Structures are given as structure tokens and as C-alpha cells.
Length: 220
Length: 134
Image (cartoon, rainbow over all chains, first blue to last red):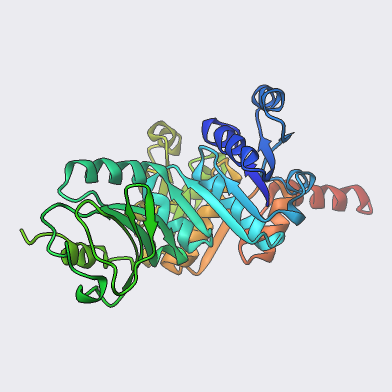
């Protein structure tokens, strides 16, 4: 895939490196000359020194043929505008933006960013879950925040252990996606039996996460 | 009229003072508390410290009952986002965004935002004046 990254800070740098290692074609746009020079020396990708909100800069990064644009600067308004330009002017299929201030996440959804990533929120959620009873993590949100992919570990005293998938009644608005057991991944079927310490991945409508947990966790 | 001004810039201050002296309800939002000092003692409107495109801040500024929102910070993108939030979240009827970069101004005009580009305004006016007959 052809991926354009806007913002060459830590996030942009490691994202570019990862995607390049995964055999994607990557272009990175960075405003600061010193930073962009350093990145172009260190990584074997196209690095453009310029403002990602500038149409001509986006064009020189080859945005017409980009499959994905990821805006990961430290400024939410810049990330929003870059994504809007990519989407509305250049019809880029998928726009991903880093959300710096968690309070802004719903603005990203409303203004048409396909995948807003709120790293602070994700971290906060992971930490919260670390200390709470269930290890429940919201992995990714789709469809402008209406759907979420979530994961959690089955506690040893879960009421579903030794039951089959078909015996457990799930909330209407959710689907089991995978069961991870040690190193193996199972796609759940009706006769799959839940075991203690299974890791469950499910797709659910936002707001229904708790109903899923209720089905899998021991009643308090 | 109830008017919200985002950005206590030179333009923001002047618009705020003018409308305030004419008896309109004016709210000025800026990230920096010190910038309100330039509004002067005569200013009787409300000032709010905060991020002008954050819905919570706009709510506090009374965006639901505002007739007009003017986004005139010195950051184009802040103005663009503020204008869209004002329209989408609060259905404010008249929304204007100041944009320095003329090419971006053109694009956002097409996307339905009322933009004011000082550069374009001055260039147009200069052309008029240059070619004006004596």
C-alpha cells in the first residue's frame, strides 16, 4: 500500500519505519528542516520538508495515488485539516489521525476522519483496565465511533467456562470475533468451548461493552 | 446580536470592541489569558480562556444562542476547525473563518465555510487601486 505520513515526531518516525519494514511504500512530510533531514538520512523512504496542510506539498508526496493518509502531528487542528484535505480534495480512501487531546476525539469523528486514534485515551483505558477486575481493552473504534473491537481475558471464575459458545447468550448488538488460547487463535463456532484464561475478542456497538462483560464475568 | 469571537488577535480585539460599543453581546475566547488585557477597560463583554474549537468551551460561551461566530486566531487550521465545529455542533447560522493561506481559503470556500483571506482581500484591493483611473 502507498501510505503518506504527516508529522515526523516520534510517532511519525516509528510508524514510517514499521510500515516500511512491512513492505509498504511510505512518504513522510515534516515541517521542520532539521528533523526531516535527519529522518531522510536514517530511513530509506521519501521524506518531504514542508507543511502537510499545503496542497502542493501533498501533491509532491504523491497523494493522488495514496491509499492511506496518517496525520500524526502534535496539533489536533493540523491533523484534522490534513485529513479533510486528503479526503475531500484527493479522495484518499482512508484517513487516520492522531488525537492529542482526548476531548477532541468526537470532533474528529464528526468532521470525517475515518480512524481517529486517541493514544492518551488508549493508554488511560489500558491502565484503568490493569487495575480493574476485568482486563478489558477497547482495541479500535469504527464507523465514526459506533462500533468497537474489544478484548478481555476470561477470569478463572467466569460463568461461561466449560460452556459452548451456543450456550452463552450474548448481547444482541455484538459478535464474538476470536478466542485466543496460548499461541493459537480460534474463530469461535457454536460448539467451541470456553476455557479459563481464554482471551476474547469481540465486536460490539459502542455503549454495549458492559453488557458483553456481564455475560462473561462472574456476578459481583 | 450575540457574537462569539475566537482569537484575541488584533482583528479579534478590534471586532470585539466595535461590536461591544454598539451594544451587541460579545464573547471572546482565547487560549491565553493575558491577551484579554488589550481589550481595554471599556469592553463590557465576556472573556473565556480556552481552546476555541472545543465544544465544551463553545458551550460555555453560549454557542447555542449565538447568531454569529468569527474565528480569527493567528492559526488557519484552528479557525477552520472552529468554524466547522460551530456549524456542525451548534448550528450557528453565520460563521466566518480568517485564513491566511489563499489556496486553502479557496478550498474551504468550496467546502462551505465562509472564509476571509486578508491576503486575497488586499491583493484584490491593490489591483483595483493600481488600475483605478484618476
